[in-house]
Amino acid sequence: MPGAGGVDEVEPVQQSSINEEWVVEIRNELDQLLRDGPTALQERLSKKRSMICKVPALLKNLNNKAYEPQMASFGPYHYGKEHLMPMEKHKLNTLLHLLTKSGKPLESYVDALAPVVQDLKDCYDALPPSWRKDTSGFLKLMVLDGCFMLHILDRWTRDFLGDLETAGIERDMLLLENQLPMLVLVKIDQVRNGGEPREEFIQKLVLDYWELSSPQPLRMGKCLHLLDSCRMALFGDEKYVSDTDSSDRTTFQFWSAIELTEAGIRLEPAKSVRTQETISFNANDGVLTLPTIVVDHAMESMFLNLIAFDGLCIGDLRGEVTSFIYFMRQLIKTPRDVSVLTSSHILKNNGIGSDEAIFQLFDSLSKEAPILNPPTKMCFDVYKRIQQYRRKPQKRLRAYVVHAYHESTNWSPWACWSILAAILLFILSFLQTWYTLYPYYHPRK
Picture 1 (cartoon, helix red, strand yellow):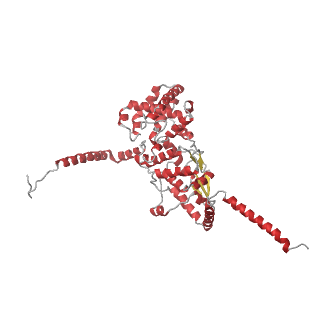
Picture 2 (cartoon, helix red, strand yellow):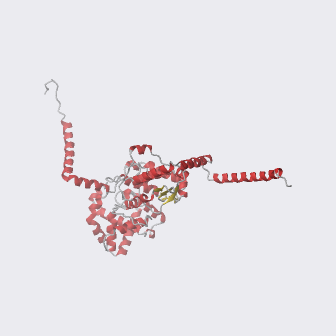
Picture 3 (cartoon, helix red, strand yellow):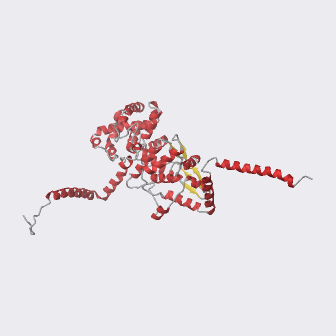
């Protein structure tokens, strides 16, 4: 029927029904959150942090190989891929070895994991529906992969695998998408030893395997998985703290390793493995202490996965990993900086190649992963102390003279010997001239 103005009124029936459907759907979800209360919501958010996440496409598109297993799959994300299937027969051999050695039947291990199978499923952020429905298949996967991982950590791997395969598996064990919940290892170890859960023993096993043990005991707490254990050993478990304001971030400048040595600052390796305890600067003797980093072919993959895990930790908003990479990237601006850090025993080149290759590796770490956080309070305090040290007139003069010398010699390592040879030649020429002229002006009587 025509309206009052003579224009037909058309009711937006279809649009209205669509809007009502999604409005009702969202309202129901909000009502559920209100019924759960703030405590349940907070628990849900904290639980999100503990999940084994899928790496976002933002990172994978830059370097997909760094996040993909090459030899073995652990957990459901990469299970069934064709190039990983040959390792499945080794998992069965491992299970047989463990059952024989422990004297416990297979049912004991299944019974230990069955009561917590739902908790294990919840650890995976993007668990496919097929795995959520197939509880039996998921439980089988946890038993086989857990026994295989413990077998590797016990260093029995070389009984049936070569060094190349072992090195590939070690790399795959530190991929974010290839993690097993630490609870799996604890439960399997409890069954094979017939005692109480040994969380600290498992954590020490992980650290010793990657040679991350420290003279001081590390308070590891309840780690989520292997990658989390390595992260806590390297960076601690303190909440991310930054005291830098916006003006500091825009005007702040740090110097490379060569620029620091030009100012008379010595670079020395630390004895501890934990970066939060080892990066320090002593203004009295001008020593910058840094952790020792072993640079090998697996390092890039490990740090990229640590960065991804660091950025996906919802709740704590850590930043120690990305801050450390940012710190090292400021030190390494050219391949010459790599040479300085290598000679100072800060970097250990374990078959990675030339200084240029190591420089490119650190460059890719900073480019392929977003640095979302400014330096931590610890790093920023080191920056400020070095800045105050370099402002001293004698240090500024030394830096200027040494830098000018390096520029004039084109950074040649033989330049110093050339200059010493030139000085020696000048002294010899002077002495020869002096002995030639001296008798002329002072003849013997």
